[in-house]
Image 1 (cartoon, helix red, strand yellow):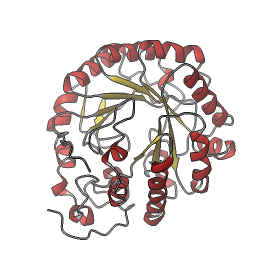
Image 2 (cartoon, helix red, strand yellow):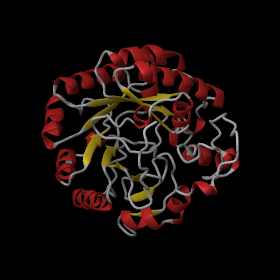
Image 3 (cartoon, one colour):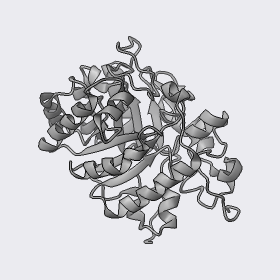
Length: 356
């Protein structure tokens, strides 16, 4: 592998996820936000959103993902994208696949400087996806949006939430995605939080099998592949002797972190009411942008500082030789064990030696 300098995330997050609203017209059974149809009057308003983007840029953040709920429910969204882009931030968007996402709206977003559009596709067939999302026609709408975005010259990614119900469809879905010219497939391993609390999780061995399959896919797919809530994918890639570019996707047009990110380590999440968390799937509030501010919370909060100290990891994560490139899903550790620093129960790997 070629040597690369490994930057610290102690001072600056690479990526900010801003839950612009909790409102959404879908009813996804795994929704971490427990979204509702109507917007909350306590949401950060346009001025507060612009201030958040200014602070993120000054903090050194590279990428901002506007998420929800459904960010398309906000009438000021295009202006927020335009403002963020003017600050030098790479602005990405994850709208829900609803009629709010029109071709005209996508055109406005392109002109505003949107760097990436991410759409969820959770199965190779409509019945699986629509059942997951709670609305008939969602699968077809997702594909129509991706088609419009591609024709308009927007770069796209597909987000897929993996669970026992769609596990067998992943190979066909991977083939389908190759035909629609996406840049990135983000494969998310469901964390039992929010509405997903009662969902049956994949076993650790099943997760490992999917990661082994994704490792093979990385070698031949025309799109990049990343995982969410399964940082051990980096361990799998290293074990299989992949070049570092394959691991972090440095050639991805939107830009990817020059080292692995994890909950609170290179990642920060701001809720619709300004609460600051290590990620959207780790619902522990460390501060609020209206009070402590993003910079102070990210750099000084005891929770964020602990999450960036791999020496504090418990169980086999703390002993693992891959702890500095993986670190385990802190969100899953909290959801399953109640301890944010406990070992990740979704990883079957047994460390071969004590980590230094």
